[in-house]
Amino acid sequence: MKVLIINGSPRPKGNTSVALDEIAKTLEQEGINSETVWIGNKPVRGCIACNNCSRKPGACVFDDDVCNAISAKYASADALIVGSPVYYGQPNGALLSIIQRSFYSNGGNIAGKPAAAVAVCRRGGATAAFETLNLPFQMMNMPVIGSQYWNIVYGREPGQAALDQEGLQTMRALARNMAWLLKATGGKPAPGRGDEPWTPTHFIR
Image 1 (cartoon, helix red, strand yellow):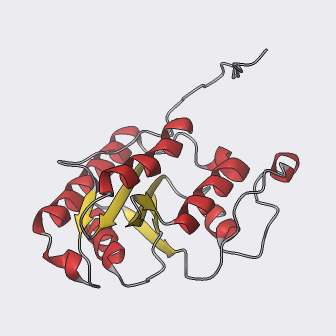
Image 2 (cartoon, rainbow, N blue to C red):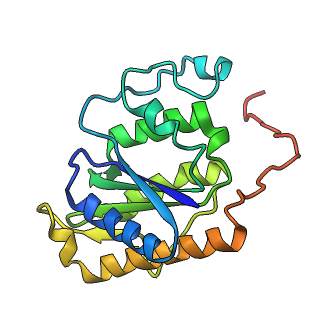
C-alpha cells in the first residue's frame, strides 16, 4: 500500500518538509510505502468554474501547471496526506487551488481513501488552516486521520520544525494511525454513498 504525500509549501526543504519527512519515515517503519510530491513554486491557476472537467472527467482543463500531474497519482494511492505552511491563518493558496481543482475533476480516484492534513506555522493560525485543509476530505467520504494532538508543527526559520519535539511526535503518531487503518481495511476505500444515489438539494426554490 502507498500513501501520497503532498508538500504544499513553495519551499521544497522548509519546515513543512521536515514534518512530512517525519511521517514518511514512520510509515516506512510500519511497512507502508509513500511518495512525496512537491507543488513547486511556479504559478498555479485557480478554478474558473468552467465545468469542462465534468464533460472530460479525470483532469482539469488547464494543463499548464502541476495540478494534473499530482491528480494523476490519486489512482495508485491508497491514502493521502497534505501538508501546508500557514499564511494569514490559511493554507497556501496554490495548494488550495490544486486540491479544489483535482478533487472536482478527478475525485473518483481519491474518494473514500483515508486522508490527513498537516499545518506548519510560526505562531498562530494553525488550527484554522488545519480545519480548512480537512473540509474537502469530509466532502469526499475520506476517513480523516487524527493524532495525539491536532496535526500541527511549529517553526519559523527553515529547519526549526526539527526542534518541535511534540510536533514531530504528533507526526509519528499520525503516521502510525494511518498505517493501522490501511492495514485494518486492506487499503479498501470507505463505502461512503455506496450504491445510494446522491440527492443534492438547494435552499432556493
